[in-house]
Image 1 (cartoon, helix red, strand yellow):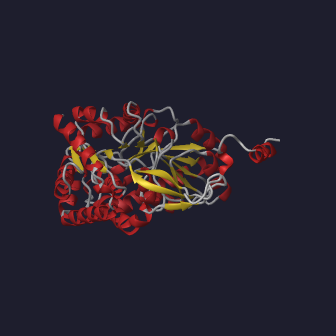
Image 2 (cartoon, helix red, strand yellow; image 1 turned 120 degrees about the vertical axis):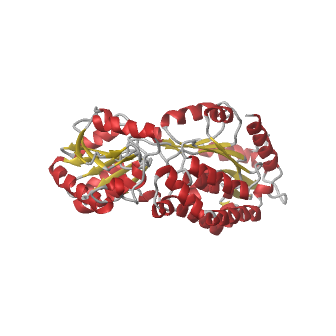
Image 3 (spheres, rainbow, N blue to C red; image 1 turned 90 degrees about the horizontal axis):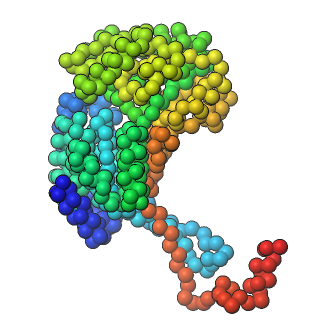
Length: 457
């Protein structure tokens, strides 16, 4: 713990040298990290397979490729983002020139979960460094193989007074949570997010909370059922359902339930075969505790399709569950696994009322061809993000921010939105010395008083 405290202080001192403010230094840093990731890509892929059973393709598409894309994006745009942005002065500021300048916060703390152990450490780290900060990253101890590779890469690229990666043991997290960071970026559960925010409040530290929740997948009677099923299975089964924005449950119109179930079964077999447990592109549950938790949820539910499991491999096949009520056990927690409960509704007003009564989810998915329905859901159902007629893909780019609202989090990142998250937007006014307008100074002249009186009539 003494070492952690020393590293925090050394990062404070390094930031105060101003070296991280320099654009050339930030660009050099990102290029160094980019080269190291490419150099270690085989190790990263192997580690993700050992931790989560991810195939090479899934590892690249959902983790490595996204980080590399984020680096490329900032290398292209960093000079634009850091340049002072001129704004029009108000009447009372004239003849001054006004600017907004993005400046780094300082020492940041990035807390990452286990489900995307490479992506969720490196993507926010890339953003923090592009914005000119230093960072202490805390990785989940559950993804031990990936953690070792991430630590190796960061030690190769950075001195510990700039970037330091530690494992999130309880004692380490408790120590770090008491330190006066300049910004905290946390990805994890709402319960832990509340504790992080409570500790941050002691130092008035700004926080970004990327949390979870039960993301609904609404399917109305106008939807293209085969295509909806295809995209729902993709969103649910990537990383074996261990995704914070995975469709947590289906809420479909009663008239299409049987048709949708049949289409989902067909798609599961198309994408993962009749025995998904033997499919090399289908991942594993992170550990035995989570495997057993999911098994208990299955046992408390009525299986429509799937349910096969292999404790030795920590694998559970994609499983469709018949769900009669929002009060059932599986609807009381975020599933975080390949289990998909299916509930039905009679009309869209019922859906709106239910969505408004539940905590705001991180994502909401709607499959519909009815423009009125789409508009109504967008206007009335709170959520962090939305996909219409698709799942997951709203996060796959740098031109839209990704983040939650209410119980699913606060703040956002990805691309420019992330750069702003890790920066303070400093307002700057340059006033002329060539002349001075006396209207604002006391004692107020007759003309000034008449001017004010005119507006206060």
